[in-house]
Image (tube, rainbow, N blue to C red):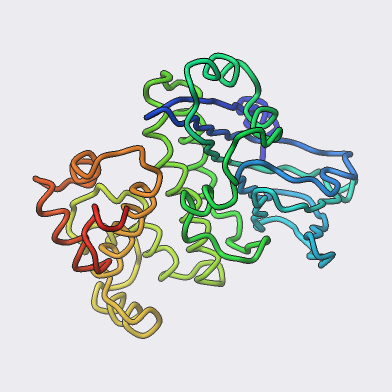
Length: 300
């Protein structure tokens, strides 16, 4: 990847408040050429997903298990879990990353101090803050357990993260809470590519197209038109490998994202319904219950 693209997206960290909760979002592109010990037995107080574009290294988890990593791999920096990452200094390491975090409600007296401090320094003190791992697991409920994923460095993953980065850099403070869902959607796309396996898989591409924009109300056949296979063949692949139709998959993904957004406590049911293109909250609630098994209010 051209160095200018990385320089143009140096890491950005934003903190924001919503409903008396402190939130954090971060994203960026980093070159670590020449670095050997990137992270040594470090604990992050927020969730971060790193996509390796170039280079070689070795991840070591909190139990001492070592995993070789390289281009196309994604590293989960799990909150409050010690890990290490060593890099081959001659491999010209380049990465993209996105992170998200939450802390407990803050009082008016604490608010100014916390928002004026780098987020992870504030929460790392643990003084009065809730356990972040459980909170992040609510924000990212479908994250795989493995710390190293293998989605491959798909162009769609790179392009979407750059879009999120640009939005995060330009957003007003009042708009930041809406970008939580975009970060969750990027995480989930990485997870889905990891699940589906090999590169150049038409089903992998179809899953991305169907889940990329949960607000899209276009016909399924129209969404899948860029894939050089007939819709009947794609339906067959979905049935054989996933046990459901493309339309059912899109609805399932839409409701899974709705679950993640509901868990963040950042949106009302009405806001989520309109975000996903429903004409009224009742229609959304009925479809949510059909898929999830309970109403949105019962889920929260």
